[in-house]
Image 1 (tube, rainbow, N blue to C red):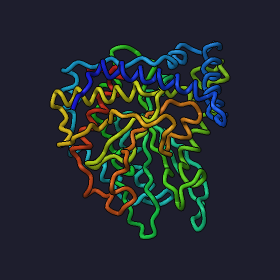
Image 2 (cartoon, rainbow, N blue to C red):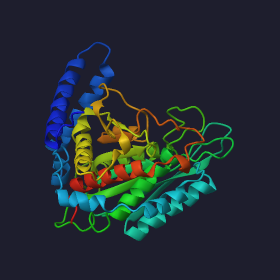
Image 3 (cartoon, rainbow, N blue to C red):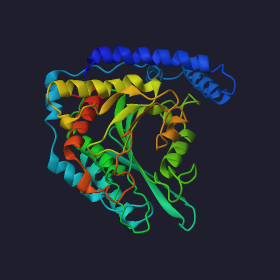
Image 4 (tube, helix red, strand yellow):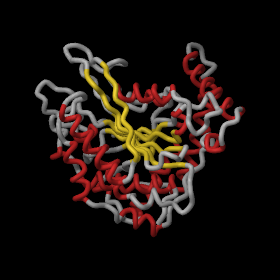
Length: 382
């Protein structure tokens, strides 16, 4: 199978992005497409106002997509060598319990996440609120966890997951891929990159922020009101707050500090594979695919006999998406990379989605790719 080089892949992604944008412009004139046209005009208006205002330099810089600078082969070997299976298992096992929002198990997982990240040096904030799922479920408390490495940096590379598990009458659903493993991956990334992302050679205006969202799962049938409880609440709260790094710019909210929002979901089985959903972030997805290529060519990941890539090279048709925690943020203008296994893994919403079906070697491969992407984006120190 032909594998494009990293530079070729970046060029092709940018070319695809330009073609997709031209097609979108043409489609805006089509009858019955007023909603899409309105969204496009709204996005353009936001960016125009930002450029026309007295926005700070960090905010204007976010409007310019620049591919990340590839790391040296030596640094790729260093990052790949940070894998520690025992550490990952210690991080994931406390999450592998029923943890429905508002239950004691959910609270235990919150404590595990907070204690782990505080010990690494992250500043922790929580966003707690009450909401009422459909009957017969009672009103309950949901809690989002926001972990920021450098709270004084105005820009954030955001990595996110949901830590709740789906309600089931037996009270036995674990949700290893959905999403205990993605949450453990973020904890593992924070631990393994300690001393690299927090000790960069020059002072930077960007930092790493980890979001652990509560209440992604529906209690009954998935709907706009019974799902994404935490993501809907947190995105609304951040949108309402004026950005503290740009006090004189009224149209910049706390959401404006998010450079990119990368959501991880349904990861951990041998059939894990991703696709690119959004043309506007195709360059970032291609950076992930490029990291996979380089690690594979250097035999630093194994891909475990797969005939395909983890990061598939085929983008979905324009407008395709899967409803998930990213949606409330995307609707408010945040750039999204959605790393959800597609098609869904065979264990999705099954009792078999448990520790026995976690394929650690696959998780380790993807962990290595994520380390490279984060270090290229944040200019890690080596």
